[in-house]
Amino acid sequence: ADVGSDWRPTITAEYFFTQNLGLEVLAALPFEHDIELNGVKAGSTKHLPPTFTLQYHFAGEKVSPFIGAGVNYTLFFDQETTGPLAGTDLDLGNSWGLAAHAGLDFKLAGNRALRVDVRWIDIDTDVSVNGADVGTVNIDPFVYGVAYVWNF
Image (cartoon, rainbow, N blue to C red; front, side, top):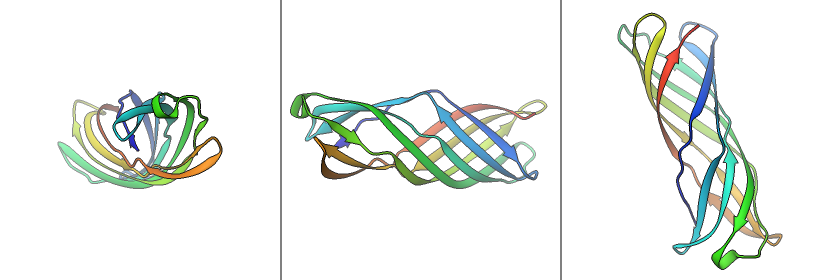
């Protein structure tokens, strides 16, 4: 099985415990993915992947790199079937997994910055068709982002 890619706007909020250490939460609009079996579209699913990451920000005058690690919970919903799975009941189980995050904040005027980042999220879902377990799908995406940062 192959799970297609998608993009959506996201929003993050980070609470700083110290000047360098923060806890970030990532939220997004629902992602939608096509599911293919041997290159043929067999269905689709939507999911929400809230992710919590403990991050360390290195001090820098113009550029501040950061790294982080955390946990992800992916909620799958609204599965639809077509092609070879048409008329079946496709179920993707919700998933807990690890997450990693790294990026660079390019300081702008005042308390603002431009961020480029990459995340890796461990999303493994148990799949069943008509109630029968058919295995696990490892999605494990790399997520790339560009963001406007506003510290307040």
